[in-house]
Length: 248
Image 1 (cartoon, one colour):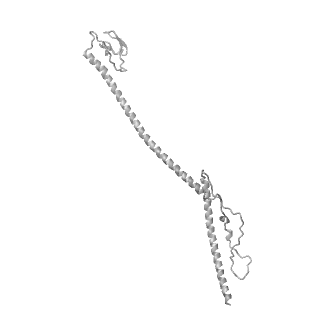
Image 2 (cartoon, rainbow, N blue to C red):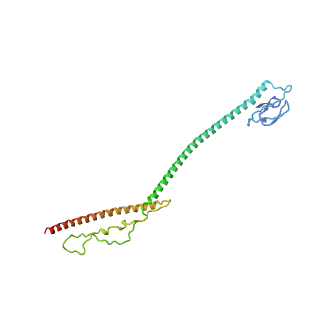
Image 3 (cartoon, helix red, strand yellow):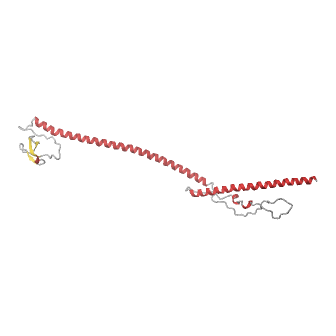
């Protein structure tokens, strides 16, 4: 099948075998050589100015063919390029817009995290300062009594005419904890590096000491109650005896 083409020099319509496409040929009218186009790689024809000479002026049909072959394909390719460019621009704008939205959201989350972190740091500093102040109210060690207890116990034997050289005494002093009366150890001192284990240990020891003090107060109260009761009874008996002696 022949391929129709127009000579780019004299604008003479020509028909060449399809097998010669892409090769150089010579125009039989103007004897100028030109290369036939390769249909596998469509090229955009460009306008060629052909000097007019006698007998070679293009006809209206040739002009129309040139217009269709030059303007129409160029315009179609241009529209395709513009369309692709618009699609690419739209995609780029959308990506930039999406990235902008994601960036704003990410920045917002980062700001919230930074605010929460700052608040947590302030709260941690308050707790740390509070623990340091609390540690100063705790004794650094348990109190110790290094003296000797040599107190006589309360006489628990009944009052009779019999002389008792070694009366029975109460066991009050045996359970009495003399160390609870001491000034105690110096307060616990800790630096900026708070040792929570040490504070917890001393706080627990302080609680035990407080419970022992409470127990001893109860024991002391009971001993005082019994002593006062016996003393009041002896005073009453002494008053009755004194009254009998004066009545005689």
